[in-house]
Length: 470
Image 1 (cartoon, helix red, strand yellow):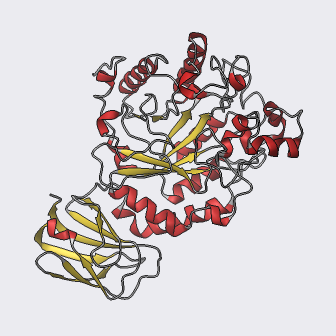
Image 2 (cartoon, rainbow, N blue to C red; image 1 turned 45 degrees about the horizontal axis):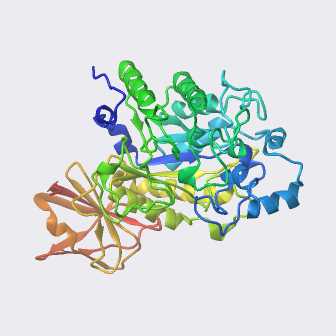
Image 3 (tube, rainbow, N blue to C red; image 1 turned 60 degrees about the vertical axis):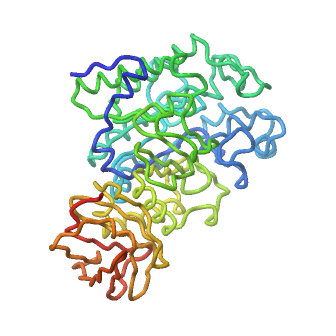
């Protein structure tokens, strides 16, 4: 049995589990006190410390003098209402964890990541270390525990993300907006970092979260101190070793190290070797090419992770945009962690449900080209005027066409393939798959298509008998 040591050199040897490669789709959930005011400017920045479009950053911006959120809060609630006062208005009256889990399963998700504790320092489980939590206050329910049980009943993996390395609202500690040991009014690189008392408090809660719920992932967020300062390597080594002893295959994201990709970091020049962790997490952005290192795009269906009541249909992805983005990500060795931001009462808005349900219906027909697949030698093909993405699995090449091309589709990239005599191309449909005809020329395939299938948005051609992907 491998014993991991608390060094990046040792931790970087950890293999990413096959289930994570195979799953492709995860559901992120941002739900908390910030779901009560449920407000952010829709034209705000993605992430960052200026006026942000992220509604879950409400407790940060409501205390920033001159910010749009501070003006909104003062006009809507008055100057005497503090963030902690929203606890009394968060009842989660309509929350049904089994209904959530059933819906996520119908969509096709392989794993679910709930915000166990966001930057407001409010744990969603019954914590021994603070009474300021969802089991003692507000909903008075162990949200992490109840959802973990419901999700696992559907054979999905479960995790609770942990954002406490950068809490901008933390009762009991001094500092910027309650953030321990940070000095306000200075540039980010000069504000200092969490001191030893807070680091111990932060990690005690995180270890408690791990031991109570045995998460299948550790999903850190936004480190403001390096891993050694925050003792992240020690925690990850313990997590890996505990999982190994249990026979549990787990993974850790890259955000326990200060080189992690956040919403404001350009990803184009980053090398896979620049990061620690099992997978890389670009936020609201994607890669243009296949990456050797596994990665996961995280984003909301709208501009925000937390529910933003002022976002309308124009602020949300359509079903087609969601499907096309997902297919593109998978073709380049990525997973999609798509976020839902429930209302304070626990219901998921239709503007989020509808594209997710549409993705699930599309996967009912085309899922074999997604789940368990791996990148092919190339990801893209636009030779015939219609964008195509490729995936590969078990001697089968899938060409996913992002739009209906008409009677004929020209494909250039299959010239890379070694094709056996048993090539049997078909178009995936709702019923019996339809045979297609392929004429192979020097550097391209010309595909004659039958009538357009009943489903929409993207169409999958399956080529059995492609012996390799190199």
